[in-house]
Length: 229
Image 1 (cartoon, helix red, strand yellow):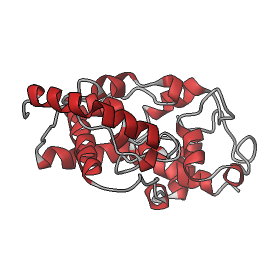
Image 2: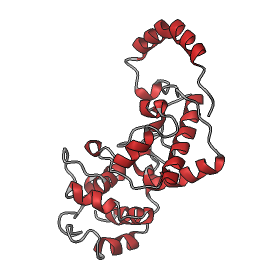
Image 3: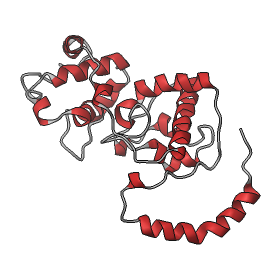
Image 4: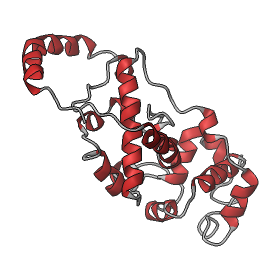
């Protein structure tokens, strides 16, 4: 880890504070995507192998909502513009959020190993570093990020023991669900329904189910739900 140059930063921030306030005022009417990401407070460097491992784990656990590149989606915030990520130091802030979740915002707790958490942290910081160096707004989750499942396998999972059919019916409560919702909106109602809006079933039951899904299961069930039009 590179040490923070506190003395130089204090001088820099003192000189630039008025300029920053003026810029914030001018940018107040602009969209968040048009503004620069918050600067990482503690620059961090991670091994390439750890970043690559984090890429895979992030895609499996987090990519549905936050996008495969952590740049956000319709229902998951852009982590490259997150103040918490900017203030994180080797997972001291990201790690607790991943483990505890944020149920009020539709994010469940994840039971991951320390190694998996560290890899996800490395990947997020790598993406944030790239975002700080780039110009332009964030992207949304691509359709290809979701449309990779096997609908037939998803139907078997849905109707199998421990699946979804104990509470739901493809010809009952879920009939035509793909005509009412699509893309991330449909996926969010499948994975993280919120009581504050119309959702597919009970919140706690879906959180319990999330702990049983593999990444392949999630894609397959989603692909099956897409056929219910």
